[in-house]
Length: 354
Image (cartoon, rainbow, N blue to C red; front, side):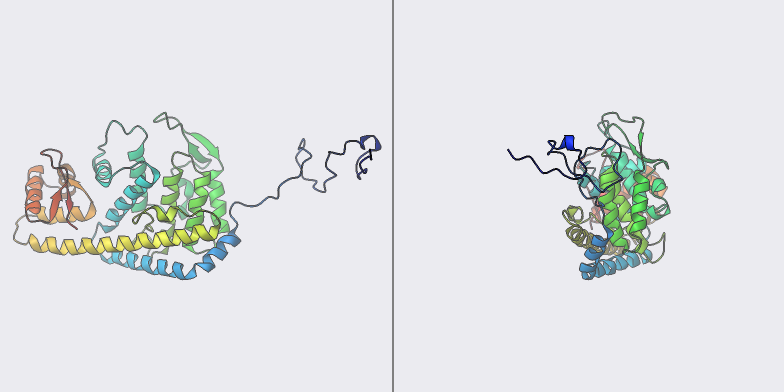
């Protein structure tokens, strides 16, 4: 039998150990590392690939920027309460996407009155409420990711989902890693940065909250495209036409194409909703001109701000008596301006006929 050729780096007594790999030129292997070939290291997010994807989708990206600019203008010049209503719709749609399935009426009651049910042990309502508050306003992610995510500076938080209210344990470095990634993407378009942020946090975040947090982070970060910070559109709609924005898979080009297409459709859906809502407001104001008192006009404003309104919510929002709210809600329903959704005699909920 022919003996294997002796390779450089092996002593004569080791000639029979032909199965060992040859010497490596890498001198940075950790102590005790196995003498095996190592796979080439590659960053999870190559900004060159995302930059190429951005260039390839420049036309669609311009259409999205134009639609967002129109949304920003409508919210700045439109009636008060429109932004809150859009944020409520977005938070409810995101809740369905992540699997919590919190309807808009339940989210309204939770946000306004902290009314929930005994089966909300998985913290679904608080998660949706957090999304609504973050989308509606407050500090943007660019002002501090840890602050935006309610995280300590040491990093991410995780908890056992089977133990409601359990103490969180830290996962050091998650927020810092995301901050570093955003710094590397600083020269990209804000929409491209949001796509990177979304897909990155779905890898870095705590399993119980990462999907919701990733979507809200991305939506609010894109709000920096608004003409004036803190006014107009504070977030980019992502879910108001379905979950297509989040379904991009594969290389960055495919992910970004799905992201831009989905965000464009969601923004257009938000614009159409605002058009219908403003038309309803004009019709409602014309229909209540013969009514005396301040309650009818305040109820119209309340119905512009909230997608679903109960008597208790109307009482708190209008600062009038419960009896007056009940009477005027029934009157608006008789005039075809609103509809009652529950069909019950108690705990009723109304919505505008938009």
